[in-house]
Length: 139
Image (tube, rainbow, N blue to C red; front, side, top):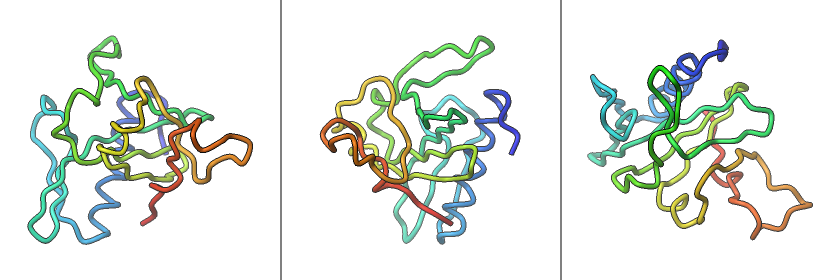
């Protein structure tokens, strides 16, 4: 998987999200522009969900909740400011995936970033971390 630029990481995250939702019986719609606060819409049984896609290639699995973009790649807004989102789809460079309900992320109290984990460390109390292990998904 090529993930050496912000653009390629964005493409990888969106592609994995489309694969995940498509293989799980959803109809996936991708907007024609990038001015909305979701990257795709997944519909199943008449229920439409808005999804923001995030990708990380960092060793610690960090996901920044601020959105970055433009030619400078600077942060410009937090996803927490957009309650119209239903899910945050996260992926890493090992093609591992997490589907996090927006409300759960918002209730977590996180303001900057969280770490993607397949299991919560036994050395860290559950209260000290946003437990992303319960949101781990596969195709």
